[in-house]
Length: 114
Image (cartoon, rainbow, N blue to C red; front, top):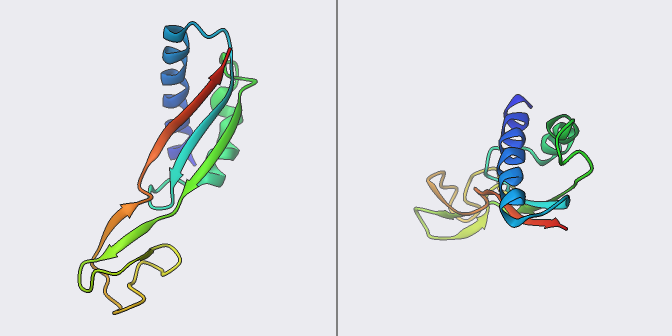
């Protein structure tokens, strides 16, 4: 959870900079895309969020998370599948040599302000 708190604290600073550049007085909501293979746990982000925004200009900002499925391709047979659901093994051939196709991101998708 220290990992998630650090990431959120850095994002708050980034968003603060963007808000100042855009001339936003307040940020009502931020939307983060979190990949299932990013190493970031959405539930931890949600639980750390109040601490990360405490006494910042984003104290009243709503957090919305969009979880991006962790899709991988098997390097042996080429099949694409949800790596998390398949426990990081190809359901077709059992291969464990995978290439991530999606779900590794942690990005600020949207900043809603006024």
